[in-house]
Image 1 (tube, rainbow, N blue to C red):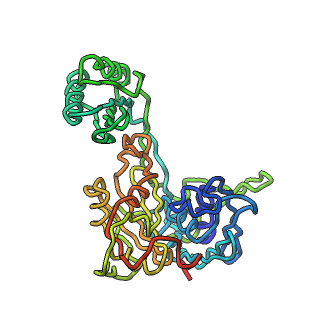
Image 2: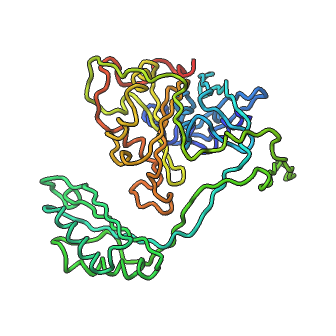
Image 3: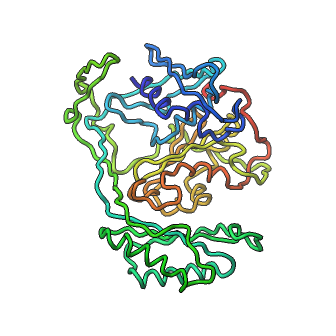
Length: 402
């Protein structure tokens, strides 16, 4: 069941396991233009082979499969209603062109509860974006803030200044920064036209060059997602067969109450101490020259999985990319609780960033509300890479887990 769970996790996002959203998409045979849909050949022993239809684009490699394994997961214990799957037992082997064998997956009894999603109406929201061109950008942003707070009140207002401007630019767009203003409120009227009209009315009475990218509009409702648990027998389990027959599935007879998610989670380091990061010669370059990444949302939290392309690079990554280092590279994670997990068979490290997305995707005002680009943001940071590890493809396809 653990092996089947992994197979399901791999194909649930379709082309993401065949090269879609892949860090090294330029290396794919077709450059990532039309990745094919995946197929999981599941065997009775729990192993599987991931492949795709002949003649379709993309690729199925150890790295494309690794990327999807790291997508929207937490610790190595992957909870399900039937089994707790240990992601740190998964092994991947290239089994031929566009064929990756998934084996070695182990599991433990599931918890006696089920995780359920609870959705509530959080209130109403609206957004307006001001274009701040040229000089005195911080002062212009401060003027807008003071004027809007005087017009509609401070409560629920959120200001984000994106310094997209370049000095001595030759065109308006390159010379401009963007001030994103969000308002969330339980009062639909205040979050609606009261707010957006106040923003537009500043056009002739605010900073020089005042313009907006948004039109005035009404507020929209937003939801707040939270997770809770219910007893296993409180939810009917049903299997629907290809012919439409519905088969009731009784709750599992073996459960483990300790498998339920705890309030405080102790990061799993795979039972091994972190290795030293090394003190040899280095070179300044983007981190993404050596590692791939995949990130996503988990309610109000985000996950960020990072994998190395070779064993030598993983030995360095494991000791170098700590929670503290992540806070230096991604400052927005510094004040938050961050859990770090190691997955040696995948040459990967996974981070769970608690609260990065606030009350969840629907309520988030973050520029990247689902944290889909968090991994690519990390990969573009320029760091001190080991000089003896050149950029490029893995030493050989399918090396991970060999």
